[in-house]
Length: 471
Ligand SMILES: *[C@@H]1O[C@H](CO)[C@@H](O)[C@H](O)[C@H]1NC(C)=O
Image 1 (spheres, rainbow, N blue to C red):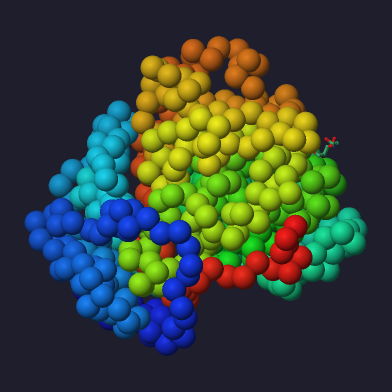
Image 2 (cartoon, rainbow, N blue to C red; image 1 turned 60 degrees about the vertical axis):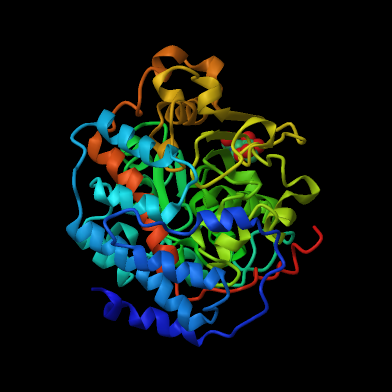
């Protein structure tokens, strides 16, 4: 069992100060959905009992919390090691297994991660071991040496209207992973900004990295933001702001952004408050963004606020202070041409339909926005069926719109695609294979495990930084 391996993480957790529970709007029915039922031959029966006693107020201190998080992790690890009953052999099988697991309601995310693992969709034993010890090397590295300096200084500030960073320039710069293929401005740079619980490489290795490597219209780099973006989202946004000005500075031209999940709100925060960045971003393509947070945030945090949670997850609650601040004073409108692509069947971010979709961005400044729900655009076609939060990353419409935006300027427009039907009749973006699909789907298990082992969980949302308070 891995409990021993993990005891270090939990010592940190036990040692943290107890604070008053957050005064957040808290839907008890959603909390119950985070309880893990006994899905796999008793593997997690004890988890259910432990969580029930927390909800019932029987066990409520943070030492209990460590036991509960490790029990859930133990169940996931046991499943990956001993209970894999099948492995998909083609894309159709993989997407149908994923759809059947996530279309069951109510959603119980850790339960679903165990079911994915039982179906051969999970980090393998080596990746899991690396994840548990926090090994982030190679293309997942958070400490990259980027020696090239931008044409003119961008730190401590690029423009006097930018707020001060809370991090050093070394900290900000080292999270940028620049692959050996990067051309330093010969091709248009694209910065890939990851989602909650994953590195840039873990987020995009199965989708936009292979799709964009070697093309003429894009030159990808990615951000490996520390502790998989689970800390304060305002700090995560600092990494994005710096990377925008750095990559443009060393390439001497604009960049574009492709984000997944929390990467979308961190980018929007950077564009809103670090306004120098707006001048050098040609295009912002946000995959499964949650500009209005998510009503399902608590699924990732069983029994919050009785048990603590990762700051960035609390900040992505539908009514968080972070989300209210981000959306205020025009933050719910685009700052640069923006393309959003999202799915009504997202298992993490809800709502994702109509103008109330969390991904739905307004265009008060007339910079150009298209909001593209895959079911609305490709209804009845394969690309408009069931797509998970992560599945949108390999959705063929998402890729076609990203390519259109990067190639033709302005937001991606379905009217500019040479054949929308051809796009919608694919299941995954052309060029991706089964391994890419599995890698992409595994990002959700990686994210869930990362949340469980995150050592600095809190009971209250981090305060809004002074530069943003009331602005
Ligand atoms: C750079 O991006 C800004 C903001 O989107 C845009 O106004 C400007 O035209 C772009 N510059 C170039 C050279 O594309």
